Length: 133
Image (cartoon, rainbow, N blue to C red; front, side, top):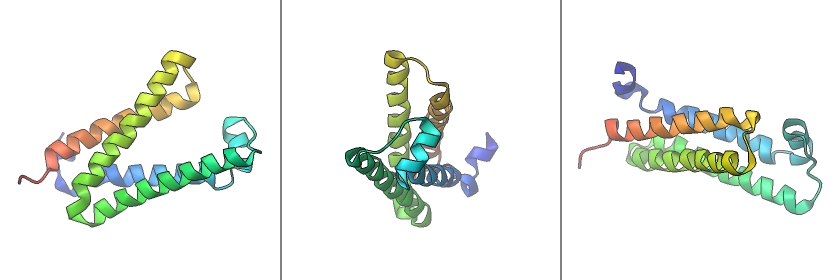
């Protein structure tokens, strides 16, 4: 546990989260007609569906950039970490609901596990490194 208590590594969780979420944003919205059939096996031809995936891309980019901003600006680190906890926890909860209602998707179980771990890591970081006011 000494690794996680080291203030030098408190930004690692936000950094890894930002890298993953920004990368995933381009898979979802970069060119949904090309990437999504390859990755998920369904065609994206309808303009409304393309719009939804590009909106998701924008949301993921904004959140990922906020995490980077929180790393660079210490006044926003707590907010960025809290947003990370909510984002990762929300994704994990949604995947859990889907697993219960729709069945388990092996492709998304890795995502569920990582999102849950990042949520717990964020909670730990917030408790460990929060400024005492």
